[in-house]
Image (cartoon, rainbow, N blue to C red; front, side):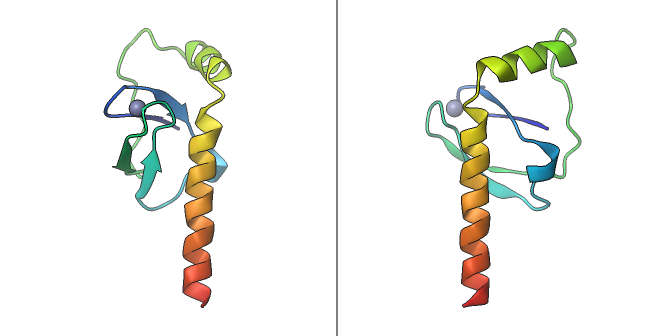
Length: 85
Ligand SMILES: [Zn+2]
């Protein structure tokens, strides 16, 4: 799914396998804004001229989205560690 920074509108793609079920704090790698992202919303395209191909090209040009995923996974790991102790 795609998420968008509310401040700078930077788009990030989250691989389906990595999409958390609950809302999470995510951090924009571009401007540093942190916001709570709800992942249970159905993804919707904001503009008709965003085609899957265009999104694919955009994601290739912006490998930075993987850093947001890493941030999410790190939080996930921290939470699990907290629950276990
Ligand atoms: Zn941003």
